[in-house]
Image 1 (cartoon, one colour):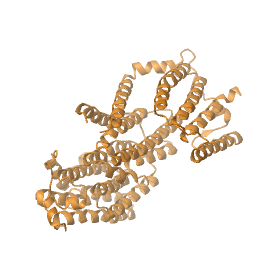
Image 2: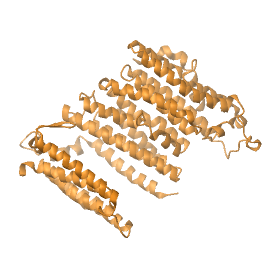
Image 3: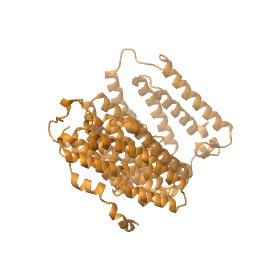
Image 4: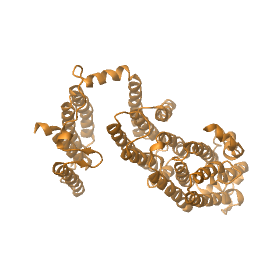
Length: 175
Length: 346
């Protein structure tokens, strides 16, 4: 099972996304996002990115999702919609699950999966070799490069975040 | 809107397009598109009515979907070529997906459905920015990947856009929807020539932007959003009436006005590449466009449109200030003799 751990985690990832795209109440969407975030962290860690995985847990789950959870708790209604309460939500969720199950069976049964790009087998999907430098962890070097060679990207993303906040305040301001 | 916030947001719209046009890394281009999209949403919602909010939501959803498709194409390109530089996209799957994503951003058929609805729901100035500035960024990316675009897909979308832009505008009386369908048709002309001679795409874009700017400025000056309201301009500002006539005929592509130049060059380039049926079809379908432009001129400048007697004096609170109208008028009607100067664009 350990050789296929990335495949299993990515299937759980997609099922989680299907779970919140079928639009239950945002509280349950946030719950599923926690699961998806944790599983996504697992996927990143399997490629050797321990720093970025911890970043997902700390910043995404522990910062952004907590704030999202609090705001949704303030704005929630008395009987929030679960997956089983509404026929539409249930139907979309089941449809998404069905498509994912069919895709998984297709990947497992056939030798190659050539949907948009080719995997040769489940094993190929599980382990993508990213090139061994051996001495440095490339992932932490990438983060360091963001702040040295990629200073312009930091400026652009910082500006985008500022403008994002301004835009949201402007849009929700009303008249 | 608070003037400081408006300045920052307009600057970000500008910066987003500039980043798209000046970047060589695919990720920065995607960032530029997203920044542009994020910052234009409050501009679209300036009027603050449910109609404007619906229009902004539709715009956001379609453009975000297009950005996601673009990101997928970028990642497929990365998987197959191993690098992030903008060159021609060698993988056909990535190229097709990228072309479709950029067509969604531009409003080409079959992704044109958002253009009339979004343009109708927002104010005239926001519609101006939407139909002119927002076309620059996707077109610049199409220009850069033009050697690798699948010809069949692009030409199909272009011809269908000219058809839809002509046919769809026939039943409209709202000026913003007319301008939206005109934009769809012009985008069709621009992308038809993209694979053969991308310089003409840029020429068409330039002249289209000038003509659309002029039209919107004239509409803003007379504060009119419907044909009926436009038909009352003869009373308030007769000169505006004449200018509307000239600019509309230029948009229809009639010589000796400058709108003829891109169409002429495009048809010439297409026939040089031994496709004859295609430019014939395109020219015939441009007649549909010309029909509703001339119908607009008929009701505005050529006749006194029927209305009740107390509507004849057009009331208006204050005259809106229009920027740069005289140079725009000159540019959108008198540029045809400059056509030999196109040889410097090579």
